[in-house]
Image 1 (cartoon, rainbow, N blue to C red):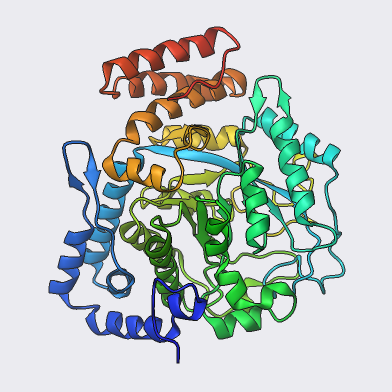
Image 2 (cartoon, one colour):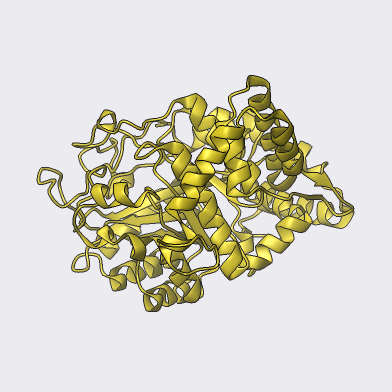
Length: 482
């Protein structure tokens, strides 16, 4: 029997079934232990220092106790602390991105995804480089600066060379004042050599969803194809970091398996990366299974309510306070609005989850990976965020200034990242407002920028930010950053 070891490079040891089951039992036994719960909550609270805030984070066992706790006033306290942590480290900024689907050719048999090999009535499509260019121009014309590229796993149709060509094409396109400044990559688990190639291509974050940490369920849900190899998939982040990629993004597809099991496994994976590589995940995504072509979510008996989903999000924020959290357009405006105050720091906007979807006037549904619940335009999402008290940020400065991996985390943990992120967010928002926003959105945005500029405490930074924003308004100069 495998022994739990967060420093091991073997999946069955750092995501250990016995440890997860023992954790769930411990959480169940202590879910009404008010003294323990209060001690865990106290540990999770952000503490003020001379330079900013610090947080201790929580172990997978501590976080699992909070998730299991069903005392209403303690749940409210969890939510309150999650909001405090979000504001302490990410302020009221919300980073904006869009997915770009390159190809839906796939050789895997994943039973929850419409791209699975046996689905013969979904049209298969792979973008040419000219079509990639057209999609990117469409995204730039919306105002996007950050993309997450997605592709099915198919060594013939979607080899690593194709992905690299697409990245090169994306970065090469400068249309009017538009430019994609960061390309995150969500493709199948691969080799150290291929991760090195992705790093050399200048990617931002490498994202790979585990889908489920429950090995028996994983094998049943991925019956055929290379993704069937649980260990190879689960150990992918270690290979990515060995290949030089220091920003990686985790996630599970909630609803495939018991959510408490998945939650414990997710936090254990973050602990493993910290223990082995000295830096945890750059981001954690929290998707739920949704309806899609020939996929019915009701076929999975582990679907979770909005209330449980909110609590999962808040508990992740308490466990890994410095990690960015992502919510996609899978979720409705109402759900996204609630989660923004519980720890979410990145949202997609104006998303289309079909191959070639951005160049189509009408939203195509025949090649969508999942139904998009929030179908608002990017401009509507930006205005909604501002009206809700958030700063939509198109900033990519940290990635391009080398503030990644442990360098980003050290700045975040010391509170110094705020000196960069707040003015950068305002300058990129000014770019969006000048170049792409509707008049209605501009009327909300420019007064917001003026108010937020006054919150910058460093006089020199404030003066530079103000001047840069004036230059953005009155010239074609762009891409200022601290």
